Image (cartoon, rainbow, N blue to C red; front, side, top):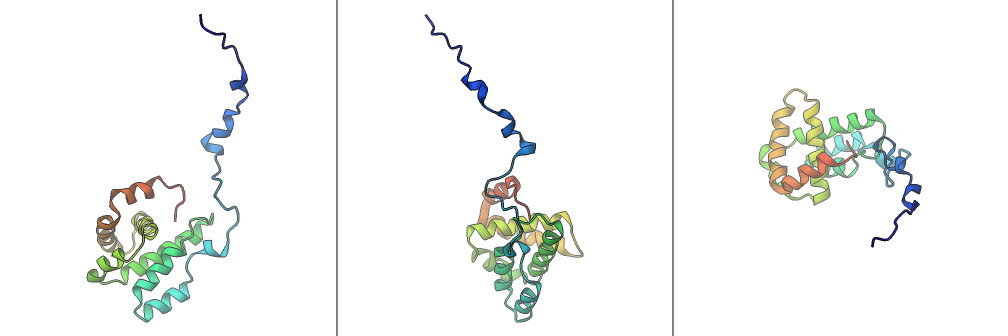
Length: 153
């Protein structure tokens, strides 16, 4: 015979805590730190003026404001990233993408998709070229990680 399973212990679990509307990521910082303000525009401009496009790209990718809740900061960072991406010659793009680590490749893909959302004059062609080269290095895994990540730039 079956054992009586009339236990009601499972009913003490608060299922409302798992509601997606109330979900708060445990790693999420509530305050905007200096790191989440994005790359310094003056520093990026200096690197671009010196012809150090790769250094400017790495600076923009490492200082991405993914933890910031301020949309203006994210918009400014996206505009800076698109400006840096536009400064590269087509022949330099492949070498630049291959020099990035996996985390920065994913961050680059985030900026590419964010740039597609708000295209500026001539940026779509540049972003498509960057997308092709980034996809060759990061693969479809990079695209999936970017599209499923809750933290946006």
